[in-house]
Image 1 (tube, rainbow, N blue to C red):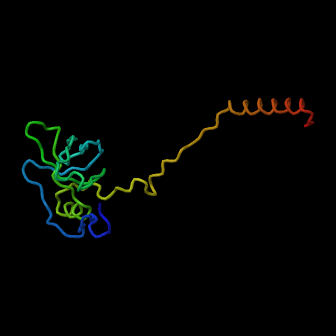
Image 2: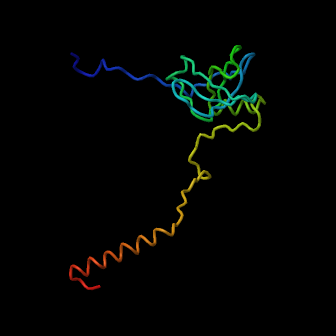
Image 3: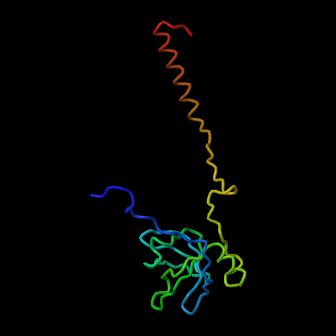
Amino acid sequence: MRKGGKNRRRGKNENESEKRELVFKEDGQEYAQVIKMLGNGRLEAMCFDGVKRLCHIRGKLRKKVWINTSDIILVGLRDYQDNKADVILKYNADEARSLKAYGELPEHAKINETDTFGPGDDDEIQFDDIGDDDEDIDDVTSTDQILLSLSGVHV
């Protein structure tokens, strides 16, 4: 039974501002952009070689590196399954911009567009007027008038 506050478990030290060396793709690897998170450590990614692949997040990255849609990742291709790959590394926005500047990523690659609710993405809901509703309102008002006249109130 503990008393006092000294032995409480401390949180991890996060030094994300620390610069790391830019990793380029090698043989059997490809750059990709995350299309959809599937859960259970899996995601769907569009590789920049034009193939859509089902990717598995390896154990080293799980619960340590959070991957979201439209992130740029490095995947390891499988020799025996072309439509599946393994996530090796997630690039942050600065690294992805550097890769684009070096010509590693194609020009059409969209970087740092995780803002899904931006000013240009207004999917407004449009309500149409349906003519049947007016008839229902008329029926209700005539019913109310009958009830009011039965109760002795003159309209």
